[in-house]
Image: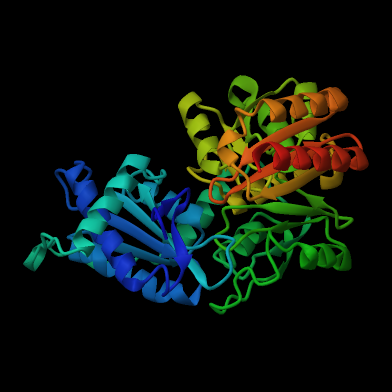
Length: 452
């Protein structure tokens, strides 16, 4: 698998790449590393462990719990809950560590292990590196120091987690959702229980699809990565709009009453204006990645809101937000972070706040989202090239400069080396789709010529 920790924990095909032995070993290593870092000093350590409904999550959860308890950590299991719920409970319960078993929007055979630090925040990169190093050393024979007797961890089910998380979501809402009819697509995932419960208690009339997880059907033709079912259901039920989550419910996409998709950039636009009205958009700033649509940037400029852009990945968005205290950030994919109320992307919270804005204004989601016009965006992957020379090739720089002159202020070019493959991604936005295709095609040819 190369380096075990990626941008969002350790992921792989369950029982092939990610085995029970690995989950157990990583958990023991995490306990030892945090103990060495002083996290457990002066008290008995405690961890919160949750999972999404994947079948493999059952044995992986058992392995993680066994590893932590064997290392002297008391464990509270919260069962099937969204990733942001586990992060929230880690903070709310004063736990030293949180663990989520999920592969998010990936297909069912995959799974993952994600660690949260005290407070429900992402574990620091240096701690992940140390956990991986300790795990590898013990995997190759170095013995563990193991507690015995009363020193071993105790395990109990924390059954209040569901209710506590739903209560947290409802407490954040600025107003009720009475009068709205909403279709919820839960991706047969971790939010299949909490999301319908929260929307219903907030006053909305709901229709649910993709809310019958059986351990095998997570993300299968439904959820935020497959919106066709939601689009059809919204129109068929005459709903005001629809909300879609992914398998671990850290994302939210929407569909308006006509069946038109509302992406993460548009959701950020709506929420940014809502937060600013309540004087909750600190520094009148929103954070997004360089892949956000140019239409989003132009919409924010018109509204007098500053846009800070980061590298691609929610981890970079979150880092920028935490460093400067910004309140709102996210990605086009629907990973939206509302830092005053969550330490990670929270799809259910995002959907609730979007619905609250519709209810508060009396305007349709389609009308609210029209504050931003999505410019046509074309993405071409150019494989088998020397991606390391993207920023140093003079010929490529000249081709980009020519493209930017042609596009003017209503277009944009982005060349991005893949982080995992020998390819370069060419992204072009323009006011006209044909122009975007034409410019993207020429730039892809330039990449092949200059870097091939």
